[in-house]
Amino acid sequence: MADLSIDFCGIKSPNPFWLASAPPTNSEYQVNRAFEAGWGGAVWKTIGAPVMNTTNRYGGLDGPEQKLIGLNNIELISDRNIETNLKEIAEVKKNWPDRAVITSLMVESDKDVWHDIVKRTEDTGCDGIELNYGCPHGMSERGMGAAVGQVPEYCSMITEWVTEVASIPVIVKLTPNITDIIQPARAAVKGGADSVSLINTINSIIGIDLDTFDTIPSVGGKGSHGGFAGPAVKPIALHMVSSVSKDEQVNVPISGIGGISDWRDAVEFMLLGATSVQVCTAVMHYGFRIIEDMIDGMNNWLDDKGIQSVEEIIGKSVERITNFGELDLLYNTTARIDKDKCISCNLCYIVCEDTAHQCIDLKPFDGGIKPEIREDDCVGCRLCAMVCPVHGCIEMVELDSSAKKTWNELEEELSDPMSWEELRKFQKKHGIEIH
Image 1: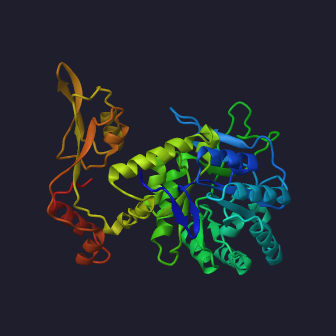
Image 2: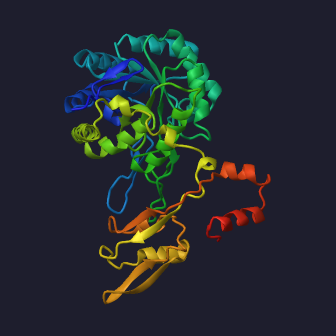
Image 3: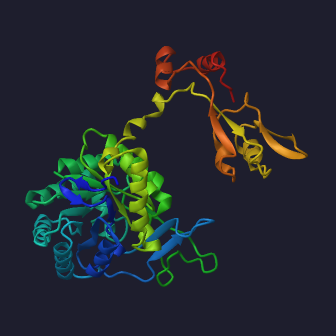
């Protein structure tokens, strides 16, 4: 079997699957259970100043076939005292020397306070410190969490306070509630961070109860914005991880977070630059047991690919990410329908006719009516294939094209700024449909 062990900025673990700083890592009892199940590491639920959590505190977004495709929470950091948490962290690390034990911290923006908590944390023997600059609710209103992560200058300053006294790796957890994730990532590195983790939860209101008009969740008839996580945020997280991974000024290991539910998700994050992956919502939905399938699935996939170590796949897809100007405008595909698989639901026809490019007709076939694509009019948008309920019924097929032209190359050839007339001439020259 492939080697799943990783070295994350000097922190070693038997596999890349870590529990994120969240309710599943709130106590020694829970983390022990997680490690017994097979998790490679755990980031302890953030510890810091005293807080009091509310009831209710969670809200869920359900899909048509799966519950909790999104989880909203207004929970704060650990509501247990710092001394108890530090004592339990030390016990867990003593009992599990081969697992990654990371302590997540969040305290007020005071240099002396940060120095004190860092020194006390290191006394536990934990492997690293994660600085929570991402919490979008409750703590941010007090000048912590996302209030730090949204201001690169604060991010750099507080990280520097920590790294002045820290002798173990420092991870900065970034907030996605910002225009450009690169800026706080660079600021963290400027402050001396050894690595970054992302993303934290996204600001959100999960919904409104149409009977009571209350927010979900409701605390005595009142509500607040919370942090959104789960499978629904994965595309946003992948984009931000790839952006940080590509940036040459960051250039530190990444711990990927955001909607990771199975081994496939984990592989995607690692292909885009993550060394470790952190999981929360999936565990809150199904329990610690999911680690068995995650480990087996990744092992089998690596073996099928002939890859000896999971570290070989880190960042392998990063070079595939580019800006729009470098995409080939003359790359050409068309949709094709396998009529033997078609169940005549005609959804492809409806969406193409109403919302796309009107290139599907309904025609007689084998005693009935089935959709048929006019390939000369198809622009290859892929919408029909996405809405088709039958796997493999509609495929996107690449058409022969010897020419290649990117938007950047086109702008160099034509005038600047390009006129509509020039663009139309280019389209006609290459047989591109004009809409």
